[in-house]
Image (cartoon, rainbow, N blue to C red; front, side, top):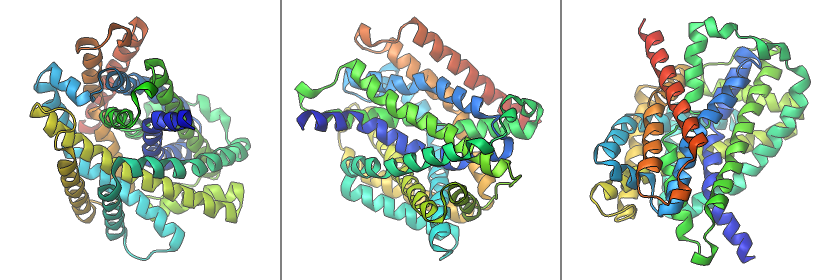
Length: 416
């Protein structure tokens, strides 16, 4: 029982990562990719997950061996590094949380009917998630995420298997989208939250430090175990992204159904994916599971950014990762909830356009975060055996260069 308890704590950060990932990027963006392009973007989804993996793993490696977060590593590089990270991320936090809240509100409206417009309903979702975090913190997040993730994964796998025969697999080798400006812009939007914004690597390192703190020293995992405990959930989140793309291709693209631009409308289309494959009763259960995972994504998102900025204040003042963390953490939870709510009432109009802007913006800063993470594990104080090998370093540099090239392409296409 003790070893089982230790195992659960060890994989907790990875499961929270998956719970945060299997939300907007999967339920919305991956499904839209399948609906609009059939199976053509499956390779893109796999490639993006492949390219982003080193930056996330470096967060696990550094936090495991140093018992500190990536923020401490940034500070070791110099004050410029955490400042650069915070300046890049801070403007996006309210709109990211607003997008998560709007997507969750859309699913709620689909399940129980339109009880109020999306902005106030999404604001209530953000308020509820914030109050839960203020009351329970990491331990509640860890428990809730683990329970809510299971059913959606099972129902999605079943649904995917049932819609596979409907997919036009000829679209898998259709590369005509490479000559379409709108498609290329969507690729950047798809990549932004796939499987998570890359700045979540910092939150992952903080979750890892928090999880390890609750383990007795004799139960502290080896580096190999720590990497494996993240690799499993990461592979699961990548698989789920492919599954949602297949679902969109097998039902919506096969019937030439255009994804609706409003959050409740698209959520209704998503529920219909399950209904057509599993029947009405199972579809309701799957929709409830989708809502559960979106709620988990909102909770994890608020926790991630509040934890990042609270820890950053402590690290920048030279006090370590968690000095005064609780007070600052609660303050940032409330601040980001309020700012995200204001975004919902002032900016949110066309949900799809809003979401594409949010996810594209997240991808534009991804090369910066990936470079910072690479510098931490190659230049900061770490055991030599924990540093990435030649292949992993090359993998990381390839990812940085490809993401930077895509970011430049995005600006060129937008500005021309």
